[in-house]
Length: 188
Image: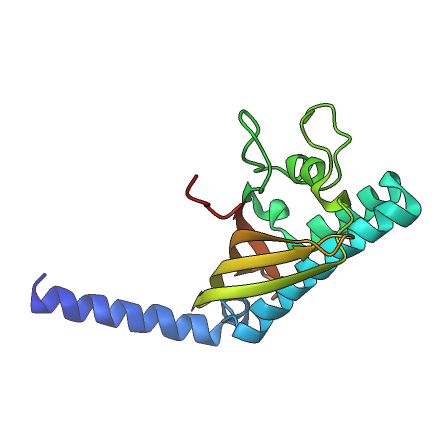
């Protein structure tokens, strides 16, 4: 690229940047994410998993499903498009859950379109904790990788490897747009 083209590109970038700062509508679209927001979203996801499990035990599958619907709508970005969701215990041909219906079936089961789903969130979970290996934040998106430790009624802890990607929507709310979960490799 010539110096002339470089200067022209820099001038255009400066002009576009100054318009974006002056235009309040544009400024609200790209809000930086803080690490505290990411940690809060992860804690909320864990709390919701335990709440859905408890609701299933005390009020039945219908109440757990209603709660799971609210959680999915609040936490995930399905209203923005496909979510890249690979749950822990899914099998081909329904390994990936890019739709809200697929996510709901995974969490609470009971959907004939997903016959292998028994309801991961209905397993009697009593505690859920996140142990991040790393968090990467770039503007209005953030990615995390680490473990989620989920405790069952019997006190047994199940550890899953978890990768999440969050984006900030136009209202400033974090949304999960990528969720990959798997059991740790054991070498067997």
